Length: 202
Image 1 (cartoon, rainbow, N blue to C red):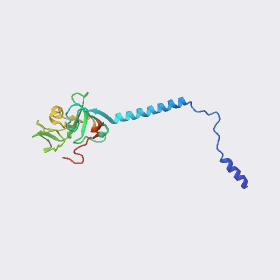
Image 2: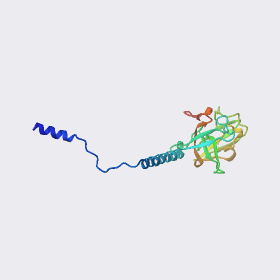
Image 3: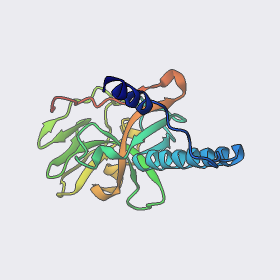
Image 4: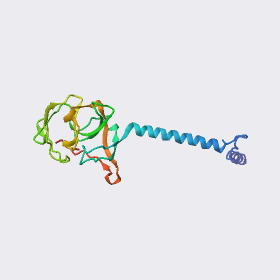
């Protein structure tokens, strides 16, 4: 009885032979299949990147000293999919009076707030806004104006050389493309675009 059990056990451990007549695909077919699969993966990745981000070239001096003419910034489109723009965010948007043009400015006034500019300063609901990032004091006056539920007030950091909300009015939420969050060119200027009010309201 013991000899029979040993014999059966040994037979069960023998490897099964491959089916006769099975052939591998020609190398060229394998190469083409892998090439197509790789191309599809690349297309999916590119589509995802273009859906969630955008690139923008700074033109002019309206955002100096924070951003300079000729610099390239990366825009995050997903930043506002589940949230709203915050004061201090630098945003890219379609110019309300010509949607074919894209502008970049800083969010200053939020929906429901009253904005005024006088004595070289911005006032939010009657309180002066501390802005160490701007280029020089403001030489014009504006407002007061109360923003609607879906309206924002945006200004360039170079206040006296910027075409912004003090010229053409409030910015509708629907015109905002995304948040500028990274300078990627030139290399010596590489860095995250910080929100000066992050973590604290002025």
